[in-house]
Amino acid sequence: MSEPPYLGRPYSPPQQGRPPYPPSPYGQPAYAAPPQRQYGQQPYEPYGSYADEPSPAADLPLAPILRRAGARVMDNALVAVFGFALILPIAIGALGLDMAGSKTKEQGGVWTWPIIFVLFAVLSLLPFLYEAVQLSLWGRTLGKRWFGLRVVKVDPAGEPLDAIVGVWRPAINQVGYQLGFFFFLILAVKVFDFAAYGVLLVSVGILIAYLWAIWDEPLHQSVHDRFAGTVVIDDRVEWS
Image (cartoon, rainbow, N blue to C red):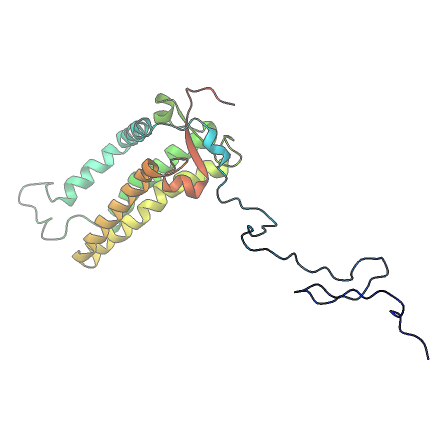
């Protein structure tokens, strides 16, 4: 009868808390037990924790909020100049002030589908084209150029905008925001008046989306900046 392979070897009792493992021909246990954490020791994190690491874009010269607001007002004013010829007649007709003795108010204004589409084009598509073309080519609009601002990527930090991001950012804040506004506007004038409260709520939401940059940390991004992965910087400050 053959002798057991462990006959004649010194006996070593298994360590407490670990099961005994069979010997390996290479001199090491065939299976490695996980390390035991002692009381008071910090838990082992094999991949590290990146939650508290600051964003590289935090080192960029972030644009002041007041100058950003001034650039936005200037851009909206420039776009309004191009759409003024269309907005004025629509506004007058919707209020029923087009002529004396008109029954426009009793007939629900002039909210026909062509006028709604024209209003959407003036208030949404025209600002979108104005902003998308300039951001894609130069990373800033006329208003941002006047106030010394520029829009760049968050990752890689400070990278100029490409065409996709340059179109995606205004698509969010010029078309995406306005879709909710016009959805409730159409319901209010075509279905039931109670939907006008939806128009008010969406308008407040759009305002908050822009004002989000005031309390956002650490990059002071608006909601559309967060979705597009962009940040507005002070172009008058030299940085590397």
